[in-house]
Image (cartoon, rainbow, N blue to C red):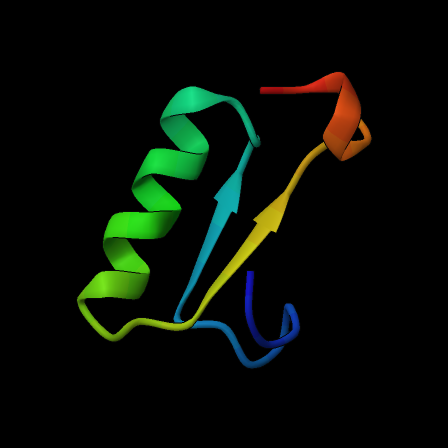
Length: 45
């Protein structure tokens, strides 16, 4: 979501409901997050 792979506090693998929910909660706590997915955004949740 923010930052690059080398600068993220956390890397979330998967952009489904669970992955994106976790990423949002981590961002809300001040962490920098990168989300990796094997599918394009319109092909996932």
